[in-house]
Length: 192
Image (cartoon, rainbow, N blue to C red; front, side, top):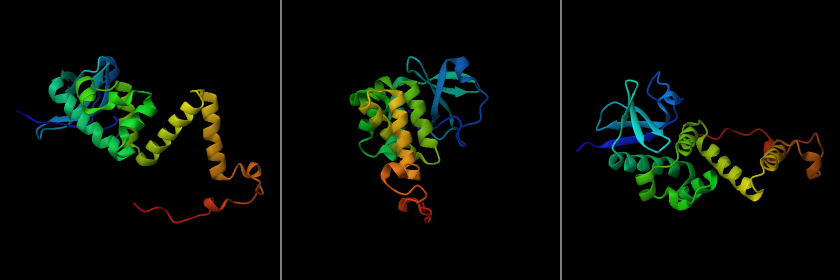
């Protein structure tokens, strides 16, 4: 029996297989890459009914759910743990307003997650600043929950965070407006 391997990856990421496929015309959402055994990587896409497909030569090839589901969960688990740590199930639940149980191995292996959620996770995972992006997304979700999902209030709070950090809120903090906050003084870049 062949082994299926999946990696979560956004279609704009440099390692995504070159393809001129119109995913939208196929009714698919690209969420990563897939290969069997040590074969070539192909785009992995999900339809609205949460069926998985490999896109090979511009054609959508259905993947067997009993193999695709567990392989997609394994890739999701590795990706989300890298982004949000061991409690990624809770973080993903908060961000995408899903029951935490929906993100458990058995549920994802059987039903997958909505294509938009998998696409968003793939996008965050491929960002140059993936860990910071993931943390910011979780903070945004928490602000949204606190303010009853009122987009205007959440945007104002997020702007207030930037204002404090960049020193634009100095008068509100009781500081002299032309004073540079100590946390904004130049420092050495964080090495990786």
